[in-house]
Length: 282
Length: 266
Image (cartoon, rainbow over all chains, first blue to last red; front, side, top):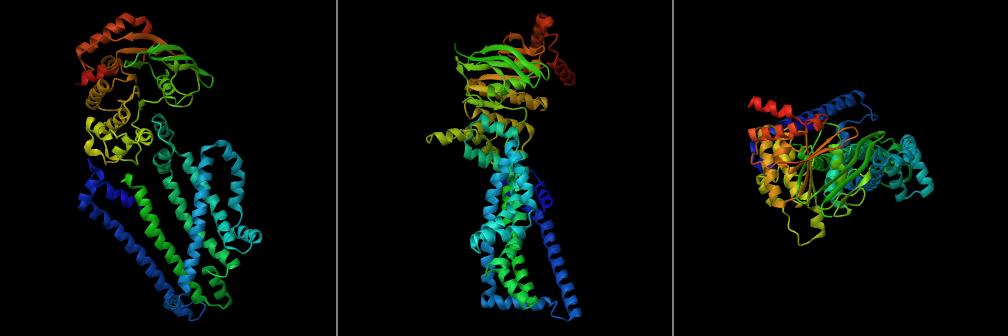
């Protein structure tokens, strides 16, 4: 994706009034949109190809162990109309977002400080490696045992699973902060908040974006496990019910629906955010 | 006593003493060039004055009181580094305003001077451009605007015009002269190039010896020539060298060769 953006940007360098001129430079933008459209074509083609292969395999198998894509879509439609699927998606998504916000906030602060302080890094590096190696399932079970089968337990368990990963990424970013730019901020007595938003955070954005992207994918997988183990609603809970009834069609329907939702968030929120944060590279 | 007093008893990096027994006093509004070979501690000296390096024995005072708290930068300071050091994610205008952020936060009636400074350096039209869209010369103009937007009483410049083509460097020197004439800061200007020091400065401090000290404190004869390669400037540097040949023999770093080369190529 990034190579596409660079190509689009290097067409002609607007000398003066950068952003204003790019707006006027419609031809550049039009040329730039072509490769990304081709990208979507390929993406779509590969997904359709996958569906075709699936359909053929399901026809050949001819068993309810592998339902056809059409049957899965029908199940999706049925449960969407009844309201069961949107409700489950909504509940699970709320948990994902809550855990995501908690994990990103704590992970960013801790990772940033570990990257800036050698002592703190030495102090916390051992526990960090340990935390990275504890299976998600263990943390989830322990949280349920300690905090009860509650909403808080789910959020805490999922956040605990994600925090070490955020810490590792953000720590890298905070180590890479350019001391020469910090010196500029010091020389001009730039106030703390301005320093944070205009000098420090922009240097961390690539790392924050990377961990947010991985984060969303990782977190929803863990949330499903946590729901399956200890909640009575949400996609994970529904899956456990379908599991007991051998309802493979519904399992696939719910999974695909949620995966699609995550992809929409990725394309509709994450990527525009990244583009905005990184627009100065164009 | 008025003026900036830089008194370095000793500055070391690990076991190596880089600067020792430096004691100079610089008057308000004076333009002082610091000349000497690479590794002599010119940049280190600037960092110490800027409050970016507090690890030395000695004191830097203004009018008898410490210039700034340890590890802090003095207020009213402008600084231009060897590289432009612009924030690549801020536009040209935002970069200049960054230096005003403290003033803007402290004083509600303060009106940003970024526009007029960008006007002065000829970059008004580039307010919204990213630094990566600018040429090297334009980036340095932005850095100059950023330094002067705070109306500094103290301006530190660390070889600000190296790695520019001679024409762009000439233009920037002219711009610097104009800005200094208006704001009249006390300037410490580090350079390799003796001729550049001769056309810009009122006074030249030659650093040399091991550990480094001020081997010669030279008051520059005023000249109207702004051209590094003019016969007047060549005569100035010849006279300087003739008079202080012995003292300066160890200070081999100021680049007479470079100016001679560029004269031949012209």
